[in-house]
Length: 310
Length: 310
Image (cartoon, rainbow over the protein chains, first blue to last red):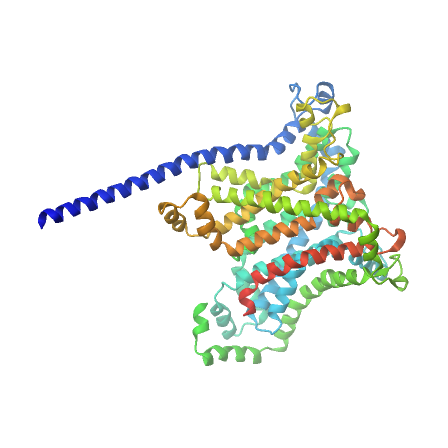
């Protein structure tokens, strides 16, 4: 009996060590595979960055040198001259100011109105809640082309009504409003899915204490919304900063346009000095790059908030 | 939050009923303002113009006086379908775009996310590299790629071609669509990777480990274990792929302006708004674009509002 028992134990042990060996093999194979994949992905990552790096490198060289010796010529001069002349010749400070004039109020309004909307929809039970939320979310997905013609005509008509043709058309206000109208849908959707995760009890206790709707929102809910508001704020700032389309079609005076729209025109104007243009593009990309490196977490969570529901 | 649903119905309803009754006049006004302003803005600048565009697509209008609008029936659509060969060219480009995104760019983004999620060495850097293009404005992307592809740019330099015999990557019909798809993918892949990565973070890592211990190959464990648990993210990724392919136009707009170059539905809308002929063909194009994007929009809404609909 004892012999048999011992044998079977032995066998079990052997089986176990075999199993362990197999596991180790699997793990080792995985390690090798991972290394290969890592090299592969790394190679592509560098290729991915190459266009940006190349543009940056070119922006440090005078265009004259490239015209004389070709793109592949060895650089004799590497400096920031293109940057200083881009700032002055392209009037970049003006365009940056225009961008701020549109982006900051637009983001503020999107966050404020979006959170108001999300607040009412998730905290008070109206029959129309889901319908409203659907309306906002669906509206955000409509192609901008579908609304463009009437918005354009409405802006002109309202301008005539007010007695100032440039009240909405060709004014920062008009561009701000269209951004707000569209992006509010996204903000409402994201904030309402976040608010659903905040315990109802918090609201209930506020109501029991006799808080007005106003206090309930500004004193109780708004402070709790800080994390999604930060993420949304970063994301919206990047989006609106980067948008050039609305400013291009709803503004006719070039000196009022934001920097990204201006870049399109400058491309045509500075066709004779590409490296200057490269410097301009790099400067235009700088704010979003800074946001990207400093506030990456907020940017990523903002992008994915809507996609993964909190 | 779950617990509140199991509360005694009397207890659950009591505060609700009380809440309804206890709305003061001021609170009702506050609530009205809270949803009134966002809803008004959103409806006035998104849904009303969208409806107006649909109406206008059945009319002739010079776009100046509202009284001039004349009913045209299906004339604009007939014109597009039967007398405008460029529409079919554009549609073909959109379809190619969709196939490219669906078969190549999106799967690549998913693959990248899947590999990077395993925390291989350098995954932080890779992540950053792949989604850096996502934060750049398309206006900047246009300049960057122009640097590589223009007649005296890097690619032609590497091919050893003089300006006179250089390949015109944006002008030549044989290359332009592929060049533009490459540029678009440069951004799209990073975006998809980001979304998918966020979804993967939510998948229990031990599931994957268990699968690999059981001897499942990488592909099997992805297809049988990871992919099914990612259903919500999958829907969003598919929807984004379709919507982006249909809407695609900013990139083309920044490269060619509204003059065309590469015909695509989104750009045709803008070529047809400026008065000539007053046919409102642009509106009809916008409606076609809208009809094509309805299916993915509904799929998205259904995925997001599943719980609310119950």
